[in-house]
Image 1: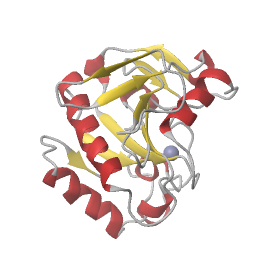
Image 2: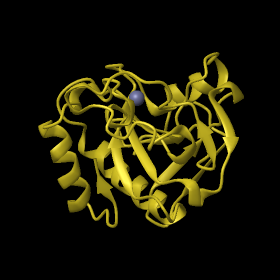
Image 3: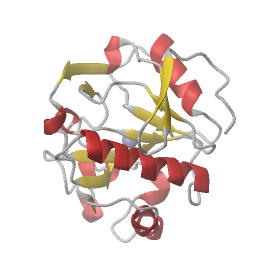
Image 4: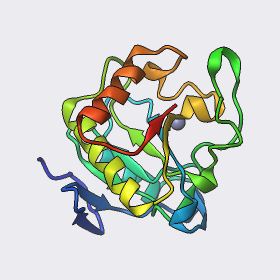
Length: 195
Ligand SMILES: [Zn+2]
């Protein structure tokens, strides 16, 4: 794996074999800490950019972000994972409300910032994410499942509050989202359900 072309404060490898680079976001990006037992949801997002990296996003949130916005993890098409916000910290990721039209927002007021760990897919605006990106997502979900004993449900930001995120995967019968569920199971992710 190509090392990220930016600084990071440290890196560690999980028991599952996933290397996670750490670069903490500015405090405006997140709120209170919470016990890991409170985490029950893992929303999947996209950054909306066609050519960005996990390192670049982590760097942005560490140095430049001024909005109440952030996510715990970024995964790019090379499979590189950056942790931008600690898993016991509440990222400002799924707040607000967009719509409940056409099956969106089914988890509104259930999946919230306070009980979720958000995962952003970088450089993903169409088609299906890369194999390396999905491999890292599977390892990350397994890691989160181990660290957060009550983590039960993987969903889209779209399921949480109706935002078109990740855009290629939204919709009640989206085939790419169905594929992702199968993909995660095939990659050995156990004990989680999907929206
Ligand atoms: Zn999102």
